Image 1: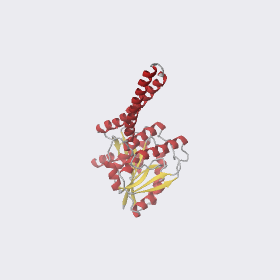
Image 2: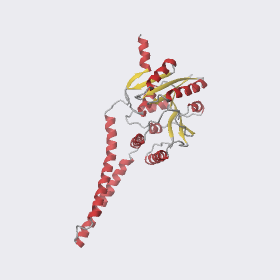
Image 3: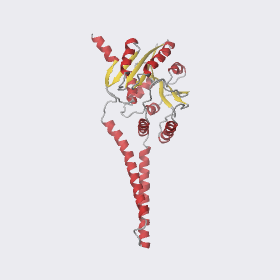
Image 4: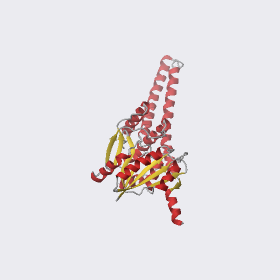
Length: 318
């Protein structure tokens, strides 16, 4: 029998976790010819999330858990879950039921019959989402696809079902600064997209603030495109040429009219503008340099504090 590992990142999801488990049990009971394992990854939660995971592990052997020593972020949780997975197929989904588990049977059937390596999902509507957030998300996808060779589908969710070969390819990309949507696109493989309308959270509140989304978008841009560096170089050359032209104009004007004081407001504006562009370009270079610095430190993507695997090993020793 095929085995499906379901990786579920969780951060302060004590309200959503029991609802998710109940819904997943229905799907697992429906797919009787498949063996399941649910891998819950506690991303340093400060509520009762870890306790609920342990309770689920006690009553259902299909449930495993990993617990981080602190909050390392969703990308680290995804990587840890994929690394711990043992199934022939690996699914990745959120615990808030915005990724409907009812799609799993269809996704599994597609991988069985149609020769795809990966079945991914994307939203076709953003009903219930703030308009400004929807606008910024759509703008990000348009921008990153314009400057990157790696296609990142607008509306794409992390929710997908992958064959083991694709999971191994993703795990080989062990960089510290991770952007999974880009990684999934970069490794390639044949992908089938399933569309569905946006679904609101089953319980709890979203952990993605506007600031976190902004930082995540910067991660995606710097991780899969060097176009901003090229832009900084082009702008630098452009303003260098412009400065030589302005110097020539000022020298000619001074020789002809002999009035060096006239035009100081426009000169001050130019100085401020050029200085701003220089700081912007320096900031872009600094962003890439900081990513390089973090990669060279070779720090672990996550640190485990506790897991169901540790518990099983203790039982074996006793």
